[in-house]
Image (tube, rainbow, N blue to C red; front, side, top):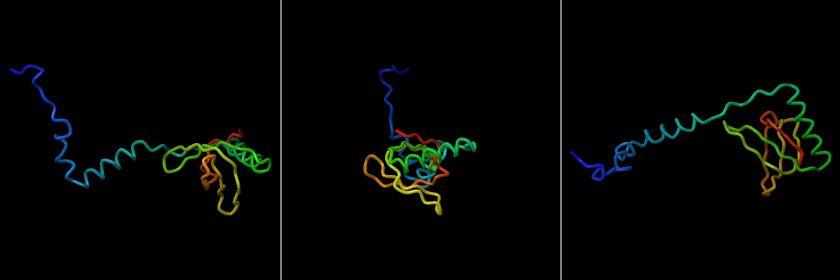
Length: 115
């Protein structure tokens, strides 16, 4: 009989055979990524109208804004100024506070707030 002090865990060595299968590693990563995806929320008409009102007010008064939007199963929040609202593509161009230009699809915005 062994004493508990004598047990040595092999750590990651025991998983080495699975690492040799590239397809297994890719499938495992994909499975974990898909498990954590969040569905796109459905907003009421009132919520959509409120977001549009905040966007237009921010553009007309050159105010900084914070928006939360959904993209590929994740929520993102950015702050900055709206530089353009494109009616044809339904996108806004946004200069974030860290000097990045970001385009966001308006229908993906789930919250907007003037700072």
